[in-house]
Structure formats: structure tokens, C-alpha cells
Length: 322
Picture 1 (spheres, one colour):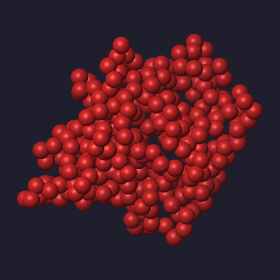
Picture 2 (cartoon, helix red, strand yellow; picture 1 turned 90 degrees about the vertical axis):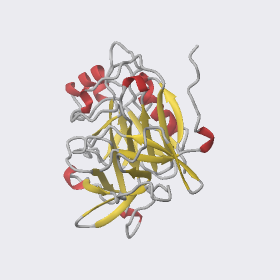
Picture 3 (cartoon, rainbow, N blue to C red; picture 1 turned 30 degrees about the vertical axis):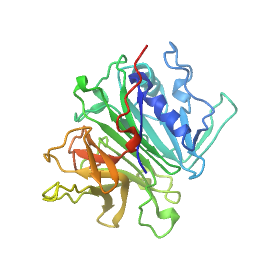
Picture 4 (tube, rainbow, N blue to C red; picture 1 turned 135 degrees about the vertical axis):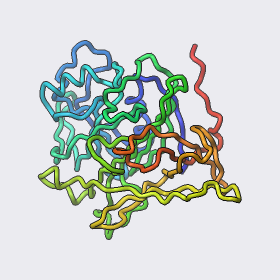
């Protein structure tokens, strides 16, 4: 499946993610969302359900917030919501967690998050290789941020590319159940979060959880940290000028290979490619993305990746502003 692309302003990055998911088979079932961006007072912000995205077909449920991960409730959470909300600040880190289920309340009332002990995880949308990416800032005035996306009933992938004048590389994140998983039954399928910066974890890792059977009462027992592996060729392209795209597999020593990040391919550095280059593999067109990775924390062990694109959108540019 090819990636599509849209363009968004800095303050609209989070809402664009929600809109794209809503347009591709997901529903926001939250009964108590945040007030509109720019509100002077964030009423009941600490007790909001924020956004709860549920796949109509796949049954996956994610709770999402437009600021970085911290304590689930309380004053600290409320303070960060005001100061670091993607929609009205220069910080561009959101947070996400998977729920077994969510029961909405009455309109305007808090619902019930089932198994809320699952930890919130930060997702950094702005390109940086800094060890603390949530401290990096992107001005609220920045426009024409390119978003490549692929969304399905059971997974969603996003690549963010910033205007060239900023001199910042791409970021990406991948949530859901990849098609190529190796489990004995549906309940063994890993639901994962992979991104260019896995907060607080060393090594090339993804967060993984068995859906739906592994939800327990102890957060430490639900999430598994698993490594990714790439087999990058020494010569790329080959002497025939053919490129090799390396699939990204993930697994662990105790369980072996668990699956792969379908739709994402790794590339070695220093092979003569730059960001936005297009390469052909057979009849398919792929776009090169230079990633803003910190080699200690990234889900990939490569700073470059390629994604398939719709050939009709190769020359897509943002509409001029009036």
C-alpha cells in the first residue's frame, strides 16, 4: 500500500493525525475532549479523556493527548497540557497509550478507560537527534509541514518532513498490529509502537504488547521491549544499479523473530541518496526519507528509510497561501 501525503501547519500537526485517522476507518469515541486550542483556561484539563481513537474494523483503541507523557492525572499533567500543547505552543511531542476498551460517558462527562494502567508513551513529531527531543521547539508560525501517511484498520504510519530552511530531518511513528506478525493465533499478534525516538529506552527497539490477551494488572508485565534488525547490503545499489530495500524485523532472544514493520524499509547511509529522492524497485516508486534519529534510542538501526508512494503524487506541492 502506497503512502499518501498532506501538508499541515505546525499548530495543526496533532489535529491532522486525528483527522486522517478519522477519514480512514477510525472513530474518536471520547466523551470528554479538551477545549479548543488557544483557550485561556483548560477547564478540567487534568481529568479529560482527551482523544480516544477506535478502529471500526480492527477493534484497537488508542488514547492520545497533544502533549508529552507524564503522570496520568493531577496538577503536573494539567500544567504540561497548558504549556506544551502542540496546538498552541512550540513543543511538538504527543503521548499515546493502548486501551483494552473504552466506555464513553455522557456527552461532556468522563468515560471509563479499561486497563488504564498501561503506560503513556511519548511520541516526538519534530525532527531531532537530541537525547531529549521533547525540549526541542518548532515555532507556531511554521507552515507547509509535509506528512506522508498510510492508515489501515489495524495500523497507522506517519512520516513528518519539515521545510528545508529549518535544516531538520524527518520523523516517523508506527502504531498498530503489522500484517506480518508471527503468532500462533490472533491474540499473539504484537501491537506495537515504533518511532524515530523511543523515549527512555536504549537500543533499536519497539514497544510491543500482545493484543488483546496480555492486558494485565501490572504495567510492567504488559509491555515488551523488542529489538529491530536490518540486513543492509554492503553495496547499494548493486553493480546493475538496482537498489536493495531492507525490511525492518523485530523480535527478542526469548521469542525469536516476532514480525516486521510492513511498509517501512531501511537504507544504508552514504549510498549517494538524499532526502526526497525517488528510486524504482520493479514497478514501484519509493521515496527516500532521511530520519532524525538518535542511534541510542531509535526503533530503526538505520538513519535512512524508504516508503512506497503513489506515483500520481510524486510532484504534489502545497497549495499557495492566499
